[in-house]
Amino acid sequence: MSARVSARGRVEPFHVMELLKAAHERQVSHGDVITMCAGQPSTPAPAVAREAAAAAMADGAVLGYTPAMGIPALQQAIAEHYADWYALDIDPNAIAITTGSSAGFTALFLAAFDPGDVVLMTRPGYPAYRNTLQALGCRAVELECGPEVRFQPTLAMLEQWSAVNGGPPAGLIIASPANPTGTVIAADELAAIARWCAEQDVLLVSDEIYHGVTFGEPATSAWATSRSGVLVGSMSKYFSMTGWRVGWLVLPEHLVRPIELLLGNLNICAPAISQVAATAALGPQARPELEGHVQRYAANRDVILSRLPELGISRWAPADGAFYAYADVSHLTNDSTRWCDEVLAATGVALTPGVDFAPGTGLDTSLDGNRWVRISLAGATDEMNEAMDRLATFA
Ligand SMILES: Cc1ncc(COP(=O)(O)O)c(C=O)c1O
Image (cartoon, rainbow, N blue to C red; front, side):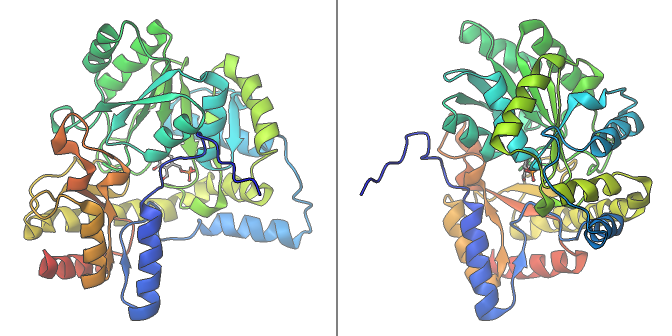
């Protein structure tokens, strides 16, 4: 019997999945779990989206394969979304609908980067960028982004990296608001980075999937400055539709056809019923419900941030958006995975260890994910208070 596993197939695990499994087991045995480890809303898709899906099923719609780039109505709805939110005029044909943004990243990395290409990302950062790039034979290189740069890259860091490494990288991924920190990059810094990437022929991949979930100024889009990069969007976060698996890419012209060909081969299309539901979720009827979720996240954020000092925590990333608090727990542990296991066992509260987002010690040991945890704010406000009560007894 052959037992072949490719070197590329040996990707890092997403540690939070282990925590979710343990949380599920605890729920079965104790029934008291508060899940603050999942990066997803605790609410269903907007009512209008669920109704649209139900109507399509009741009508006996075929719901077969769609065009690889997605149904035109959804491409159009997303183009209107950019006009509405950012005053950007985008050709619907430049928008590729993907199976969650996750499938969009895979297709994009394949379309834009060759094996060995260097793509910069932040540390801490979303682990699937690194793991997917590595599985495709590209080199994900982390830029250490601590409190002094608000956990986001700066133009100066990119210039310095290029000077030290004899030239610019092939690509740069930024996420704003970011996972795990929730931090938003300043609009002028984003514009400066987008301009530099365009000048240096660096493909800027701007992960904007948490747009809409911000607690101050709305986040700006990289396309407000330059259309040479790629925007990544998703129905998962603001639109509360994680499991429906719909995301999108907004593409410069040279990448449209390669992405269309790759998507057709890799996925054929995103789920048809979900595309119908997503089209409805982008309409004005869903807005009050979705804005209500953002108000709840803001209230939850206030609860968590105001109570972190009760755990002796004094350092956390600026939680400008998304639904996370990324907190330094180095006074409590130097092994965040074990600590999260212990917290779950003692209190029933499930948190995410920072090792997912900053594995290994790195150069700046104060950013070592073993010293940090990510707390999701996406649950009910009562749960936030209950979780903090329980954590205060443990810490
Ligand atoms: C920063 C970031 N990008 C992309 C994704 C992938 O999301 P999806 O595939 O559901 O669109 C996630 C999921 O948590 C994320 O946090």
